Image 1 (spheres, helix red, strand yellow):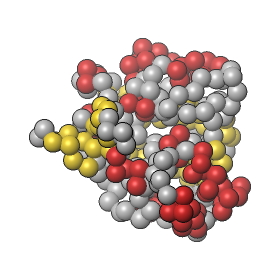
Image 2 (spheres, one colour):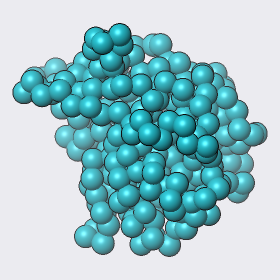
Image 3 (cartoon, rainbow, N blue to C red):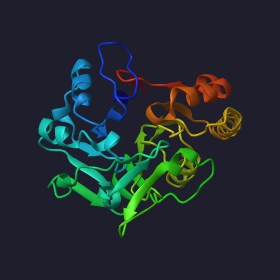
Length: 274
């Protein structure tokens, strides 16, 4: 299996584009997968630099209904004329960020794409084949990031706290390895892993994705305590962690201090071979 980071907040070198967003290309024995499309068409340029043919992708997934993961959806449809994009039905909700300075920003997907013939909407968990399981509906709140407190959805004209029922995660099986792919892990990576293990009771070998810890705390001591506890919890599993995007480099450093080489940061342009 090969996993390439096509978009992320930082770049491996000046050869690659970077922006606030996430996109993974995953090549398995059976599939060429695109997981998220970043905020715009930038992921396509990075794919080209890595020698990846986006037109050859045979299946795609959108982790959740935020622009930094689905803003490049239209660009993907233009570059690829065959692959379906699977997402949760609630991904086309109206989502907003309430920034600390009082600004309210729309962060949802382009409404005009909702009825695209290659979008497949799901409710809850579903299986593609023996190597791909997708799951959603996470309700646990252990080590839940306070950064989520700034995210809302519109319902009946009112902004209510987003519970991230539009978020889904990918579980891949390749040989004897189990790989979990998350987008932002808004529902908390600990809670996501718990549900993943119901499909993979033998445990998860690798975890890829953002952890939504960027600017989660104003108080450094509270942040340090949260990251210390989260790191200890993550080390209870046998998993190796590859993180990026909304984790934030500061939170990553805090986790890395406790977890060592069990966690790595992946800028755009990175390629991991499993």
